[in-house]
Length: 292
Image (cartoon, rainbow, N blue to C red; front, side, top):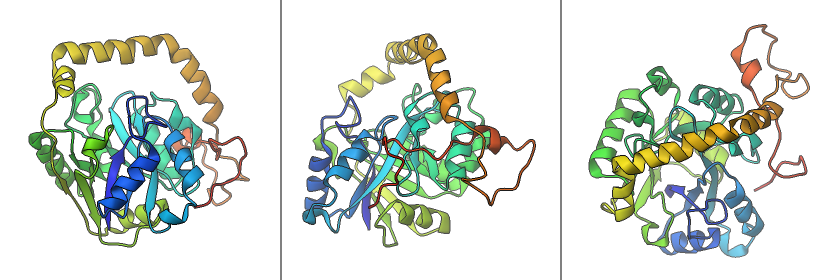
């Protein structure tokens, strides 16, 4: 099956110009079986899909509900949680990568770095203090990104091979021109998040490829030292001002494991996961799981 596993919708990403419905129609016209919504620290695009997914025209089309999370120390990380699970903590950027890994894995999700050799300010290998031991804990690596250079993608592929993890491809589309320029071929029947998670965990054959868009003016500005410095000042400087607010929000969502939620977990006094796990809460006001 053919998927694009990295797309940004205008419903969930401020820098995107493409609606969920437009993505669906264009991918269907190109013969894709589905794509993944991966908005920045937001499930709003996924909610937009939930509102239209019952349209009979989309019966055989699969939309994976993901997120591109902005960590404090490892850049952008693609996260895929089990069906129906929207963790509110993922809408608050700035967690350390180690904490993110523990939370995602506890709830049965998978995660991996997006464009690991891309722009230093938002890519894993651009962080000098990145704990490289965490590389073995990722479930996949995005080895092809339409917006990256051939060299960046080549190095990402080598990294995935060294780590022994599956490879993903994504167009990283924010505009319609890039839709269909990346393709992840999965040798399995993928109809929902759970299917994709199972395929990754079971070692199903996954092939990543596509066509790079070439260097754009916007990309050049990002790669220039002034662009990188400006981003750091904005991303980390302003973040300092609102950091107390984010910490308070995270603390209200980060709670110990409750026996009623996970009775099968044995009590352990010093288990890290008990400290960092998130209570099973959803983005929607009702605490009902979403179907479909």
